[in-house]
Image (tube, rainbow, N blue to C red; front, side, top):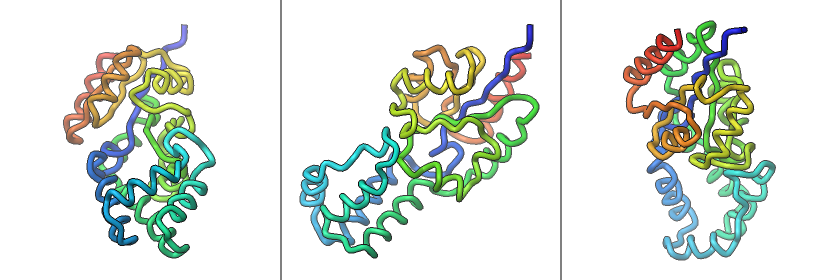
Length: 210
């Protein structure tokens, strides 16, 4: 019987990228409000009325989202493009070079893949900035899966893409709810807080797998 493949499954934001998932969106919205010169309640009301598409669980909706947001907030094309560029800069943060290099070093010892909540356009933006496809395969984005963590179906679809059983996978994420979601389908998880601790946990998992 062939030996089963061991997988290390990584989240992106807060793990492979240095970005505070809990604050960047509000900070970005604050910059949007400053640009359009509207108070919070006015912006929220206009955005709600615009009924923008769910770019976190749908494909091919990015253009409609940005066009709809611009129309709702009376942004011209230059402002719309600036807001979009600022969004992706904030979304992507900067590379966690140490963790990315470590993931690359696992070649020959384990397969590496990604499961990340995302927005339509993330694959192109993150590939352009960080070249994840040269290290991780498959890369499972929520906007392409049609479901986001911590929904059990997100993990099941990732397992299907990996061709793996839950026992074969170690999942790395910086949010407890995502680790809990993985546990609900039998995937062991590591709550990422710093590179050294996460790398040590992965090494223990690999030793245990023998």
